[in-house]
Amino acid sequence: MRVFINPGHGGKDPGAVGNGLREKDIVLKIARKMVDQLKIYDVEVKMFRSDDTYYTLEQICNEANRWNADLFVSIHVNAGGGTGFESYIYSGLSNNSTTAKYRQVIHEEIMKKIPNVRDRGKKKANFYVLGNTKMPAILTENLFIDNKTDATKLKSDAFLTDVATGHVNGIVKALKLQKKQTQKDVPKSSTSNKKNVYYRVVTGSFTNRSNAEKRVAELKKAGYDSFIERFEK
Image (cartoon, rainbow, N blue to C red; front, side, top):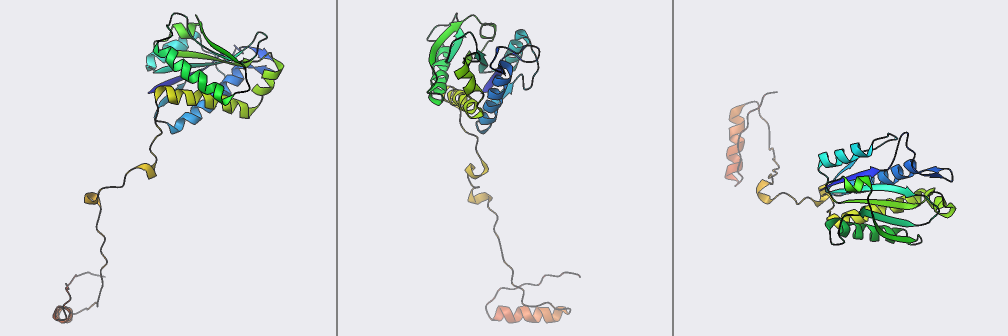
Protein backbone atom coordinates (compact mmCIF):
# COMPACT_ATOMS: atom_id res chain seq x y z
CA MET A 1 0.00 0.00 0.00
CA ARG A 2 1.10 3.56 -0.70
CA VAL A 3 0.12 6.64 1.31
CA PHE A 4 0.77 10.14 -0.03
CA ILE A 5 0.88 12.83 2.70
CA ASN A 6 0.53 16.45 1.68
CA PRO A 7 1.35 19.14 4.28
CA GLY A 8 -0.61 22.11 2.96
CA HIS A 9 0.98 25.33 1.67
CA GLY A 10 4.75 26.00 2.09
CA GLY A 11 7.40 28.40 0.86
CA LYS A 12 5.92 31.67 -0.31
CA ASP A 13 2.46 30.48 0.77
CA PRO A 14 2.23 30.48 4.60
CA GLY A 15 -1.41 29.43 4.66
CA ALA A 16 -3.48 30.73 7.54
CA VAL A 17 -1.69 32.94 10.07
CA GLY A 18 -2.63 33.87 13.64
CA ASN A 19 -1.48 34.00 17.26
CA GLY A 20 2.17 33.90 16.22
CA LEU A 21 1.65 30.72 14.17
CA ARG A 22 1.79 29.84 10.47
CA GLU A 23 -0.25 27.02 9.03
CA LYS A 24 2.58 25.78 6.80
CA ASP A 25 4.81 25.18 9.85
CA ILE A 26 2.21 23.37 11.93
CA VAL A 27 1.09 20.98 9.19
CA LEU A 28 4.69 20.12 8.31
CA LYS A 29 5.30 19.12 11.95
CA ILE A 30 2.19 16.93 11.95
CA ALA A 31 3.13 15.32 8.63
CA ARG A 32 6.68 14.55 9.78
CA LYS A 33 5.33 12.89 12.91
CA MET A 34 2.95 10.83 10.77
CA VAL A 35 5.76 9.65 8.51
CA ASP A 36 7.86 8.71 11.52
CA GLN A 37 5.02 6.73 13.13
CA LEU A 38 4.20 4.90 9.90
CA LYS A 39 7.74 3.51 9.63
CA ILE A 40 6.82 0.46 11.67
CA TYR A 41 4.07 -0.53 9.21
CA ASP A 42 4.30 -2.39 5.93
CA VAL A 43 3.46 0.63 3.79
CA GLU A 44 5.24 3.03 1.44
CA VAL A 45 4.90 6.70 2.40
CA LYS A 46 5.67 9.78 0.32
CA MET A 47 5.60 13.29 1.77
CA PHE A 48 5.86 15.55 -1.26
CA ARG A 49 6.78 18.66 0.73
CA SER A 50 9.36 17.61 3.31
CA ASP A 51 10.61 21.14 3.93
CA ASP A 52 9.47 24.76 3.52
CA THR A 53 9.07 24.58 -0.26
CA TYR A 54 6.16 25.83 -2.34
CA TYR A 55 4.50 23.53 -4.89
CA THR A 56 1.43 24.22 -6.98
CA LEU A 57 -1.70 22.18 -6.36
CA GLU A 58 -1.31 20.77 -9.87
CA GLN A 59 2.23 19.58 -9.10
CA ILE A 60 1.05 17.90 -5.91
CA CYS A 61 -1.83 16.06 -7.59
CA ASN A 62 0.30 15.04 -10.57
CA GLU A 63 2.93 13.54 -8.29
CA ALA A 64 0.35 11.60 -6.24
CA ASN A 65 -1.23 10.27 -9.44
CA ARG A 66 2.14 9.41 -11.01
CA TRP A 67 3.20 7.57 -7.86
CA ASN A 68 -0.09 5.64 -7.94
CA ALA A 69 -0.90 6.19 -4.26
CA ASP A 70 -3.64 4.18 -2.55
CA LEU A 71 -4.58 7.06 -0.25
CA PHE A 72 -4.00 10.82 -0.36
CA VAL A 73 -4.09 12.77 2.92
CA SER A 74 -3.82 16.57 2.89
CA ILE A 75 -3.13 18.20 6.27
CA HIS A 76 -4.35 21.75 7.02
CA VAL A 77 -5.18 24.18 9.83
CA ASN A 78 -8.36 26.22 9.68
CA ALA A 79 -9.13 29.92 10.12
CA GLY A 80 -12.17 32.15 10.21
CA GLY A 81 -13.17 32.46 13.82
CA GLY A 82 -14.38 28.94 14.54
CA THR A 83 -12.98 26.14 16.69
CA GLY A 84 -12.42 22.42 16.37
CA PHE A 85 -11.65 19.69 13.85
CA GLU A 86 -13.31 18.79 10.57
CA SER A 87 -12.53 16.58 7.58
CA TYR A 88 -13.40 16.72 3.89
CA ILE A 89 -13.85 14.52 0.84
CA TYR A 90 -14.68 15.59 -2.71
CA SER A 91 -18.20 16.94 -3.11
CA GLY A 92 -19.01 14.62 -6.03
CA LEU A 93 -18.57 11.41 -4.01
CA SER A 94 -21.33 9.36 -2.40
CA ASN A 95 -21.37 8.46 1.26
CA ASN A 96 -20.94 4.81 0.25
CA SER A 97 -17.72 5.42 -1.68
CA THR A 98 -14.40 3.92 -0.59
CA THR A 99 -13.15 7.45 0.08
CA ALA A 100 -16.08 8.16 2.41
CA LYS A 101 -15.50 4.89 4.27
CA TYR A 102 -11.79 5.66 4.70
CA ARG A 103 -12.62 9.19 5.88
CA GLN A 104 -15.15 7.85 8.40
CA VAL A 105 -12.49 5.68 10.05
CA ILE A 106 -9.74 8.31 9.98
CA HIS A 107 -12.01 11.07 11.32
CA GLU A 108 -13.14 8.89 14.23
CA GLU A 109 -9.58 7.85 15.14
CA ILE A 110 -8.42 11.49 15.16
CA MET A 111 -11.25 12.53 17.46
CA LYS A 112 -10.32 9.69 19.85
CA LYS A 113 -6.89 11.28 20.28
CA ILE A 114 -8.21 14.83 20.76
CA PRO A 115 -11.47 14.30 22.72
CA ASN A 116 -11.50 17.80 24.20
CA VAL A 117 -11.69 19.37 20.74
CA ARG A 118 -15.02 20.21 19.12
CA ASP A 119 -15.99 17.77 16.35
CA ARG A 120 -17.18 19.99 13.50
CA GLY A 121 -18.17 16.98 11.43
CA LYS A 122 -17.43 15.18 8.18
CA LYS A 123 -17.95 17.45 5.18
CA LYS A 124 -17.62 17.66 1.41
CA ALA A 125 -16.03 20.37 -0.72
CA ASN A 126 -14.75 20.99 -4.23
CA PHE A 127 -11.12 21.41 -3.13
CA TYR A 128 -8.62 21.06 -5.97
CA VAL A 129 -6.54 18.29 -4.36
CA LEU A 130 -9.66 16.25 -3.65
CA GLY A 131 -11.07 16.53 -7.14
CA ASN A 132 -7.86 16.06 -9.11
CA THR A 133 -6.38 12.98 -7.43
CA LYS A 134 -7.23 9.54 -8.81
CA MET A 135 -7.10 7.70 -5.49
CA PRO A 136 -9.26 8.08 -2.34
CA ALA A 137 -8.36 11.51 -0.95
CA ILE A 138 -9.21 13.27 2.28
CA LEU A 139 -8.37 16.69 3.69
CA THR A 140 -8.25 17.46 7.41
CA GLU A 141 -8.62 20.88 9.05
CA ASN A 142 -6.92 20.65 12.43
CA LEU A 143 -8.30 23.42 14.65
CA PHE A 144 -8.39 27.19 14.02
CA ILE A 145 -5.16 29.15 14.03
CA ASP A 146 -6.99 32.43 14.74
CA ASN A 147 -8.76 31.04 17.80
CA LYS A 148 -6.69 31.66 20.94
CA THR A 149 -7.70 28.44 22.68
CA ASP A 150 -7.05 26.36 19.56
CA ALA A 151 -3.77 28.16 18.92
CA THR A 152 -2.57 27.30 22.43
CA LYS A 153 -3.12 23.63 21.63
CA LEU A 154 -1.37 23.98 18.27
CA LYS A 155 1.70 25.37 20.05
CA SER A 156 1.98 22.14 22.07
CA ASP A 157 4.23 19.47 20.56
CA ALA A 158 2.42 16.81 22.59
CA PHE A 159 -0.89 17.89 21.07
CA LEU A 160 0.53 17.79 17.54
CA THR A 161 1.80 14.27 18.29
CA ASP A 162 -1.74 13.26 19.29
CA VAL A 163 -3.11 14.74 16.07
CA ALA A 164 -0.51 12.84 14.03
CA THR A 165 -1.21 9.62 15.93
CA GLY A 166 -4.92 9.97 15.28
CA HIS A 167 -4.26 10.30 11.55
CA VAL A 168 -1.92 7.29 11.60
CA ASN A 169 -4.30 5.12 13.61
CA GLY A 170 -7.02 5.93 11.12
CA ILE A 171 -4.84 5.18 8.10
CA VAL A 172 -3.69 1.88 9.62
CA LYS A 173 -7.26 0.85 10.38
CA ALA A 174 -8.72 1.99 7.06
CA LEU A 175 -6.06 0.32 4.92
CA LYS A 176 -5.69 -2.68 7.27
CA LEU A 177 -1.95 -2.17 7.50
CA GLN A 178 0.26 -4.70 9.27
CA LYS A 179 3.40 -4.00 11.26
CA LYS A 180 6.69 -4.92 9.63
CA GLN A 181 8.33 -8.13 10.81
CA THR A 182 11.29 -7.55 13.07
CA GLN A 183 14.24 -9.95 13.19
CA LYS A 184 12.92 -11.66 16.31
CA ASP A 185 9.55 -12.15 14.59
CA VAL A 186 11.12 -14.09 11.72
CA PRO A 187 10.62 -17.87 12.20
CA LYS A 188 13.74 -19.85 12.97
CA SER A 189 15.24 -21.86 10.14
CA SER A 190 14.00 -25.40 9.77
CA THR A 191 16.17 -28.22 11.09
CA SER A 192 17.01 -29.20 7.49
CA ASN A 193 18.99 -25.96 7.16
CA LYS A 194 20.54 -26.11 10.59
CA LYS A 195 24.29 -26.80 10.68
CA ASN A 196 25.60 -29.54 12.95
CA VAL A 197 28.30 -28.53 15.41
CA TYR A 198 31.06 -30.98 16.37
CA TYR A 199 33.70 -30.83 19.08
CA ARG A 200 36.97 -32.63 18.28
CA VAL A 201 39.06 -34.17 21.05
CA VAL A 202 42.79 -34.42 20.31
CA THR A 203 44.72 -37.15 22.16
CA GLY A 204 48.15 -36.23 20.91
CA SER A 205 50.34 -34.74 18.18
CA PHE A 206 53.33 -36.62 16.79
CA THR A 207 56.19 -35.77 14.44
CA ASN A 208 56.60 -39.46 13.57
CA ARG A 209 53.69 -41.09 11.68
CA SER A 210 54.39 -44.53 13.14
CA ASN A 211 53.87 -43.13 16.63
CA ALA A 212 50.56 -41.59 15.48
CA GLU A 213 49.43 -44.89 14.00
CA LYS A 214 50.36 -46.66 17.24
CA ARG A 215 48.16 -44.23 19.22
CA VAL A 216 45.22 -44.77 16.82
CA ALA A 217 45.57 -48.53 17.21
CA GLU A 218 45.55 -48.18 21.00
CA LEU A 219 42.41 -46.05 20.92
CA LYS A 220 40.55 -48.36 18.56
CA LYS A 221 41.48 -51.32 20.75
CA ALA A 222 39.96 -49.44 23.69
CA GLY A 223 36.75 -48.86 21.67
CA TYR A 224 37.28 -45.27 20.56
CA ASP A 225 37.01 -44.22 16.92
CA SER A 226 40.12 -42.37 15.85
CA PHE A 227 41.83 -41.01 12.76
CA ILE A 228 44.99 -39.26 11.68
CA GLU A 229 44.90 -35.71 10.32
CA ARG A 230 48.07 -34.32 8.77
CA PHE A 231 48.95 -30.63 9.17
CA GLU A 232 52.04 -28.51 8.74
CA LYS A 233 53.24 -25.73 10.98
